[in-house]
Amino acid sequence: MFRLWTIMKKEILHIWRDPRTMALIIILPAMLLLLLGYGISGENIHIPIAVADLSRSDQSRDFIQKFTVSGDFDLQYLVNSENEIQHLIDINSVKVGMLIPEDFGRRLSANKKVDVVILIDGSANPTDASTFQLKLNAFSQMASQDVLIRMFTLNGMGNKIEMPIDARTRILYNPSGDIKVYMIPGLICVILQVQTLLLSALAIVKEREQGTMEQLIVTPIKPWELMLGKIIPYLVVCLIDLFIMLWLGRLLFGVTVRGSMLSLIGLSAIFIIGSLGMGVLISNISQTQMQAIYIAMFIVVIPAIILSGLIFPRESMPRFTYWYSELLPVTQFLQITRGIIVRGTSAITLLWTATIPMIITSILYFIASLVAFRKHI
Image (cartoon, rainbow, N blue to C red; front, side, top):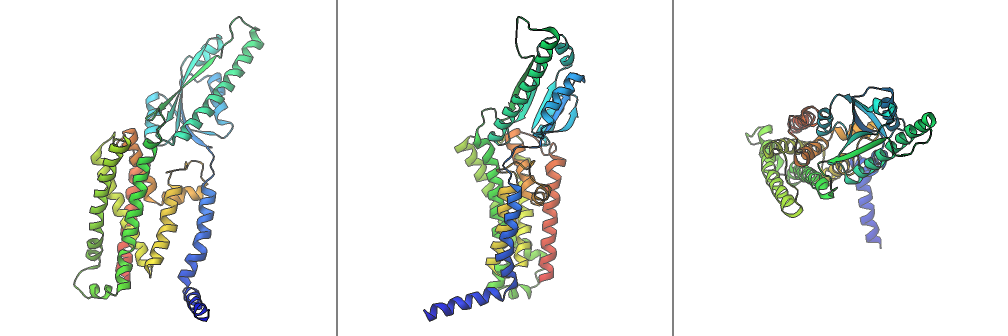
């Protein structure tokens, strides 16, 4: 028993005398709980919506207000055509689009039935898409009932009673609601993020623990050459894994790449380089492999799974959590992969919403890893 207590005391003192380990053990879990706790609301609120109000009448404005007054939907864009709505859905700026016909107000004033087209982004979580559809149908029926009551008040009961507004919802890209179409592209992103991060996070600190870093320092190899020599093999391995996962996704789950395979590969390479740079940065600020894994898991991997949009919608997240997820390249890469694989959009279409932000964050992490590596050596 005394020997057991001696070993326990030694380990407790080892943790107590290492401030960095103490901070990792105590502070990181608390921070992660707060970050994820506020980030996961489980509610579908403030859903961005685009409206093409071709009628521009009092009746159409009242109809739109029925959807936005509750806070479930936020009117983000007023556009002029269905093509513009489609474009906003393609670049992941909105989840829902509404097309109100030009004769909307005239037909309602003449007690005639009118059709409204509602487009829903089916590349989102099928559960969320179904929730959007239920809410949209409910608000549409409420608006239609209000119009019907006004008709009865003005004209009395007629022989024919029917809802004056027929909202026809159309789910794009994944009308069957196949969960595999939604999850496979996201899982590819997260798997690549975990693999690149853990491989590179252990690269430098492993050399330091084994005592071989000093041997590399005294060689004529420059710091950037040493770092690139370590991460380029991982880049090749991760690209091979990308091909394997895309092939398995098509073979086993029927998920095919609808967009440009070349764009997907090129942007994947940029994402992998940025993630490897992030891992090297973590490796440089860590003293042991345990610290590197701990930092990588708590600061990047778990938030990447929870906050990137893989499972939970980002629109309803608090501002701090939302912007924290923007600092993770996997957040933009997830939009790119779902855009190219599911929607068939191009990298140019996603240029300002996802492509450029991911390129910037990846380059910044890679430069930071170079600077930290040079300073450490």
